[in-house]
Length: 125
Image 1 (tube, rainbow, N blue to C red):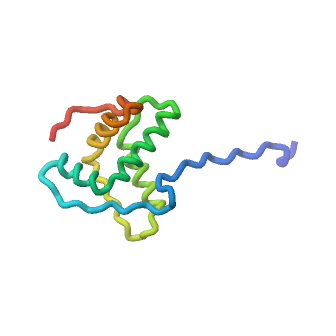
Image 2 (cartoon, rainbow, N blue to C red):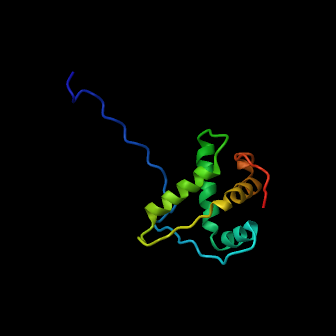
Image 3 (cartoon, one colour):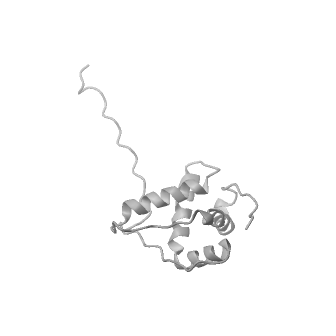
């Protein structure tokens, strides 16, 4: 058997780009706030695409058999996808880690198929 008789390696899977047209939306800055909750609400209001992208990532993993997902992992994937898709080299994508638990709660509250997918702790602020 020579090297031409061995099967070729399969191509690695291609994961979908979160940003459909190759252009990553730029998050809109929001004024600072007294509480994490009000800052989160302001951020979400002007950046609804973040929620949509997180739901898409969560559903993709859930549909592949994952019953528990870490919201932190999804945040990091979203940051990476944004960096890859952004055409602005000076882009300074900010996704505040304080919003992780808020997004996890919102997703489980509004997406019945994802209810219980994240482990939650009691909010302290």
